[in-house]
Length: 206
Image 1: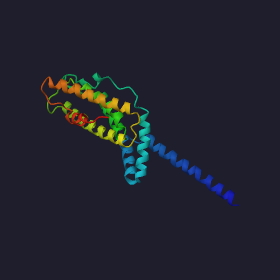
Image 2: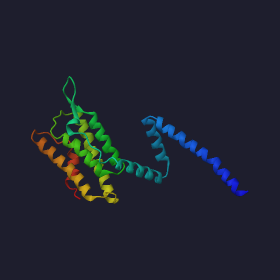
Image 3: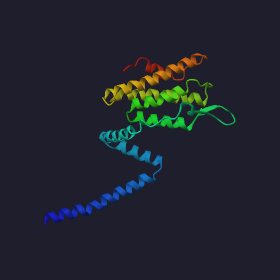
Image 4: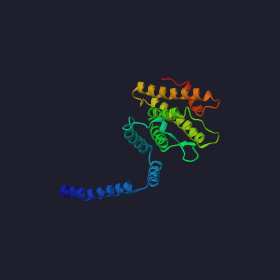
């Protein structure tokens, strides 16, 4: 009879689907970060735009749960190297920048601005040599702020910004950190290392 045949077909298929899911979960659990990145990039580049959009939505929901996680203290972001005593970025700074990049990468621009205000403020009173590692790190942060501002603009234009007061607070926090740094650097005659960020922020109001 038709009904038993249909039921039998469904029952025969279900274990196969579960087996495939189990195998893929085994791959995900054991793959290296590089292997996962390659697999995800391959999936997104070879799929329809809808797949990329769904992936971004899922990543955004996941990261939105962590936006209130505490940040490390500013003084922990740069540390003196044993022996030479030169200032260098710490593991905490790399963690902060990674967090900011994940946020603005999935369209949570305002949340990333709040995170980036921390290293901008931490760098306000540091001295550095031209061409040093610190100068290179400051250039990275400057570029990150530019990317985060673009992400925040897109977040605002798309109507995803949600609480505008929280968005304004994040923007003002970053502006305050920039002004603090500009005032400090002016005292000892060097160029401000986050000049592009400062220029982008100057005329943007919510």
